[in-house]
Image 1 (tube, rainbow, N blue to C red):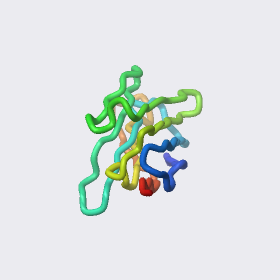
Image 2 (cartoon, helix red, strand yellow):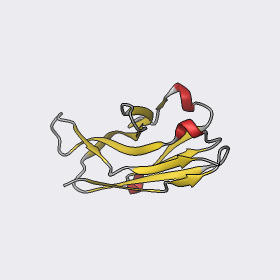
Image 3 (cartoon, rainbow, N blue to C red):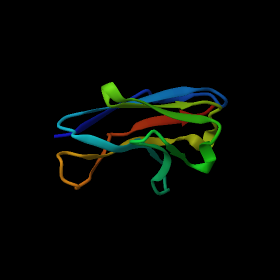
Image 4 (cartoon, rainbow, N blue to C red):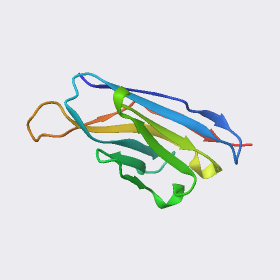
Length: 121
């Protein structure tokens, strides 16, 4: 059983910063990618930033230069440092993990429980 535990959401004023973290635990053989999606009310879930096993990170255009996705391999943990936050960044942020559970090629996907980020004055 694989679990993702997120933390770090909250209320922040425009221009402020927050740091989200997501720790994966369980019988993980190898991680293919780990990152963040978000979903605002009435909108579809969208990619924010994902870091691949080789270390490269894919960012959505709307967060480039403001958000940084990093990982701590030894702890199977990823972080999302969010700076210069805007009201339109308000959403539930979900951690996403794609991993292998054994030596086969099969990839499994998991979601965290979500953490609310609200940017408002």
